[in-house]
Amino acid sequence: MEIINRRVFLRERPNGMPGTANFDVEDQTIDALPDDHVVVKVDTLSIDAFIGTTLNEGSFHASTPVGGTITALGVGEVVASNFDGLKPGDWVHGPLLAQTHTLMPGAAFQKIEPGPNIPPSTYLGVLGLTTGLTAWAGLIPVGEVNADDTVVVSGAAGAVGTVAVQLAKARGARVIGIAGGPEKCRFLTEDLSLDGAIDYKNEDIDARVKQLAPDGVTLFFDNVGGEILDIMLDNLAMGGRVVLCGAISQYQNMDDVRGPKLYLRIAERNASMRGFTVDRYAEHFAEATEELSRLLTEGKMNLPEHIVNGIDNFPDALITLFTGGHTGKMLVKP
Ligand SMILES: NC(=O)c1ccc[n+]([C@@H]2O[C@H](COP(=O)([O-])OP(=O)(O)OC[C@H]3O[C@@H](n4cnc5c(N)ncnc54)[C@H](OP(=O)(O)O)[C@@H]3O)[C@@H](O)[C@H]2O)c1
Image (cartoon, rainbow, N blue to C red):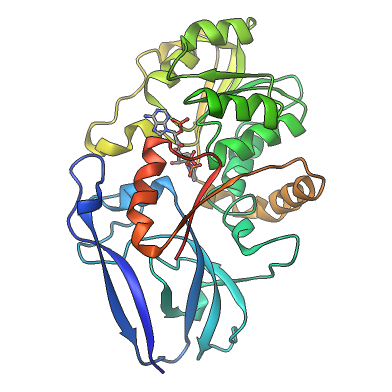
């Protein structure tokens, strides 16, 4: 066996926002298949915010060592197997890393069954751990969304946000999205039929929330943190809930994360703020997958894919996630 694997590795740790100089690419040869291992040909990789934090030392998610292949979840096809549970031709989901071929113990992967109506990338998007399942966990068991809610979602035109706003609509809530730029706001109100959208780059966020939610916001699903979180705390209804899904505005400097200044609003409004990590909600995944699959089948779940081709362009795709140059789910096809 001789397979050439092209991998993206960490050349040096970033100081703040990662740049292309922090990464490098090289070819390696896979010429042996140890017991219980498989080789997977990578089909699609998921570009996720947590990858950015793994570039730093002491990351909450395991840090990538300098010289190590960059972390990424993905889907791919088994091309060689010494593992009883998988055979060539099987499709899998798991920690494939930023490369074209992955040699790993077969037990690291979960078998998936893509079909004509469910392409493999769906397992990274609407049915993916870091996208659909995250939106579902944050909105339903954590946020306890209901039909009386006025929901605001930040990062609303990104992957988690796009699923979250549609799920909240499907559960009968009034839904407002916050996103950067008129095109993303048009996507939210016209393509996804939201009740309102706020362009945080060009509009007065506070004035627009007051206009769109005059009685206050009962549920804020936050992907962004920073100033937007403060403005939303100031606009919470009595008894409002805040779900801390992420804080992408703060990930460039994890040693100096800025917390909300207006946290006293939580006391004054008898409100609550709950954080979560999706992996803790595994007992809900079957129920979540069922609801998300049904919404997909009924045409009520639209998640555009922004596909970047070529493994060498993986670093650019990751940087774009932080600069907002995509709508929906950011993916790389090696
Ligand atoms: N709790 C969990 O278990 C869990 C699991 C997965 C993901 N997450 C979190 O979910 C959030 C969304 O992740 P995703 O993968 O779906 O990414 P995404 O939303 O597809 O992409 C990130 C988006 O964030 C926006 N953004 C970036 N920097 C910003 C800033 N400084 N201020 C305002 N908006 C900014 C950009 O959109 P604009 O163009 O609109 O600025 C960008 O498109 C992240 O915070 C991530 O950490 C949490």
